[in-house]
Length: 82
Image 1: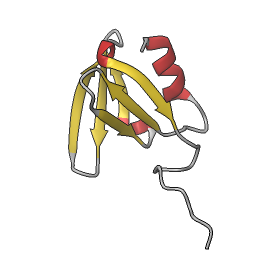
Image 2 (image 1 turned 180 degrees about the horizontal axis):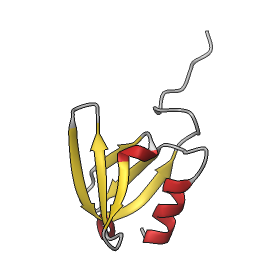
Image 3 (image 1 turned 90 degrees about the horizontal axis):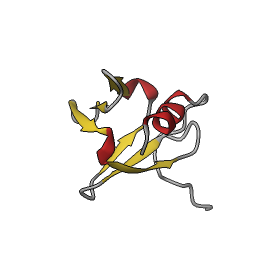
């Protein structure tokens, strides 16, 4: 992923939740733009995870893709018809 595209996804309004796919197979969810920041020259991404009170620094080059969710939908859950 390059810095320009990541910043565009981060700055989109309304913000759409992101799932970042990393080179080692892990995924990281970004449900709100305030949970993500670019450090220094932008090569390092800071991700906070309030669900488990943790944070992580990820080198941008390790993000291989970003999956974009629906605006206003904090999860991947879809409602089923009753």
